[in-house]
Image (cartoon, rainbow, N blue to C red; front, side, top):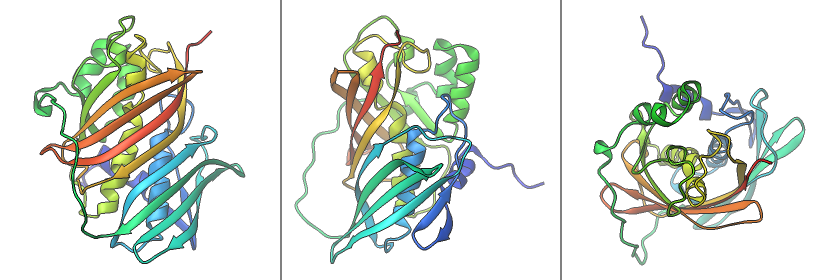
Length: 289
């Protein structure tokens, strides 16, 4: 009998868009913990759409995105790519995601031909070895109701994501320093396509970035229902090559929360200490009345 597809196979199939015509692609969604499309999925699919219109030797180096309205997980998403610029060194693409005849998300992405230049980076922060940390299957049931823990484990099954400290929903009512660390890698090997690794990191980057906002106020988040929220905008810069199927440290902090919004900023490091990605995201973070 053929082997059943893994959770990673399912995720890769989800991100593999259907070409409709030149620069137009169609993606599907899957259900999430909340009744809307997971933001990381839309961002990753939009980056796939942009990348498929760019020469493979030009690598993604940045993206800037806005989440406009919640996506409907029961309907397909159409991605329209605008070829903004094809220069000697840089290529720029704009992508609009459309559902039910209106834009729900848009992304600008830039790609660059490989070149050498000045090179320096910040020092990697201290973090526990990922192999010593409990898995999601071990952590989630300790702190969440059984049905929510099961659904969250299923939603993240393609990724091995391990918290370096107690997650927000494990310390409700106890404000802490607004900083969170997680290690992550895909649950399985990926092909050597650099765009694929960037796309998978983009997908994961939306999972935990606003955790640090919650920690500062002793809130557990969407999983326990003591805040409501959604991503508003998201930016990433890809500095150095990395593999999403090898351990990456996601070091996150929140410098500010005000006016119903929270800001998260982060750096993603390879296990051997190379700064691979910088990330910034703002989201709606509201306390239910």
